[in-house]
Length: 182
Image (tube, rainbow, N blue to C red; front, side, top):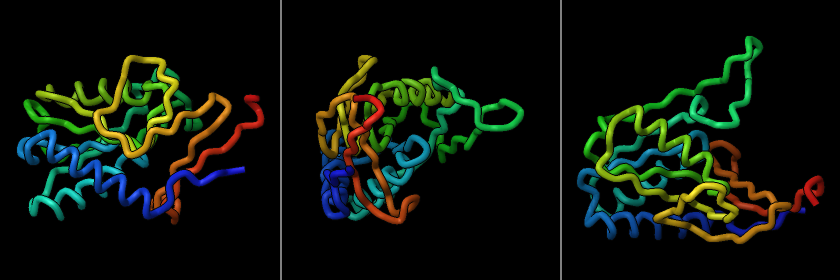
């Protein structure tokens, strides 16, 4: 059974808070770029960009990174055994810029590690910061977010599902007990 831990209003409050924290920590948004990790991280990044523009009165560039080829658990998705690529798009050079990497849920840290590798192939940022909507713990790598919408301590038998209107037609984060892992 799923238990909702963030509803639409709570997600909106979390993204607003993260937007303020990004502005405060970076003393504005000069030289900053938001980069969302495919798929849901992109939508969180776009929402943060909207909030930042409302607060600062200026746009912040938003890009997206596809980590498919950088995963250490690469899964094959096509008939010819090639991984399914969605493509990366970053609107400007990230060299010497502050990149705020964005994802929906932080768990083991492996997705973020793959995204860091993908970013390094695009340029050499002056700094990389990490923003996540949910931090559920259980890190396997030494990765810590700079901005967190909500810390949700979980057991390994639980699953966090983040749903966003842009993909799932609803804004909601739920926690589900995985009966197979018990």
